[in-house]
Amino acid sequence: MRMERLVMLVISAVIILTIPGMAAAEGSMSVKGIGPRLGLGINPDQFVVGVQASMGQIFKVARLAPSIDVGFGDHVTDVTFNADLQLTLLKPPKSTASFYGLVGPTLIYLDPDFGDSNTEIGISIGGGLKIPMGESSLYNLEARVGLGDIPDFKLMLGVYFGGASKKDKS
Image (cartoon, rainbow, N blue to C red; front, side, top):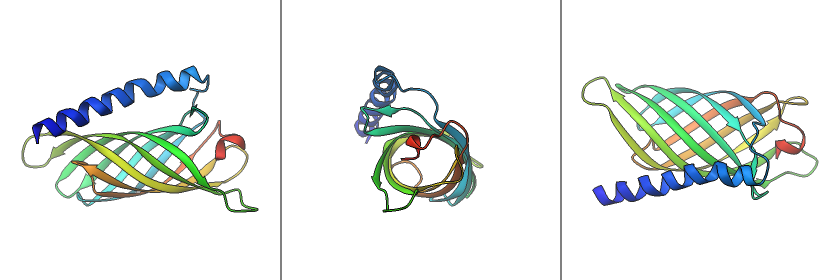
């Protein structure tokens, strides 16, 4: 069990440290949009609030989308750091909305009401829907499943403001 955690930590650290360099090499590491998000988590059962960003594309295929969430409830407060890669999967014909998949490392700091705090790491996999709401903003509905010692499921609704051009809404 200890070796598994060490391997996950090393893999996640390598991913987190190399992604910005890869995106910068493509010349597109600027923030395309940033905004709040809120939702619900399962195991632990929590109300979750956070902030999300949409960064530049990596290898012109995926977009870096980091987020930080704080969960309250189930006798624990947690802070979750996600370093997701989003890949547009489907754009319905004659629609400005798009569906995407996501995958990325997740680091979580758990502070239970009773007991010692703990830091865990895992992988998040999920998908979502982006719906434009004007020239430079969009709604974001996202579901994610946690693999490892992170929350089992989260459903989040968010808004990206500013910097999102029509090209970036994919």
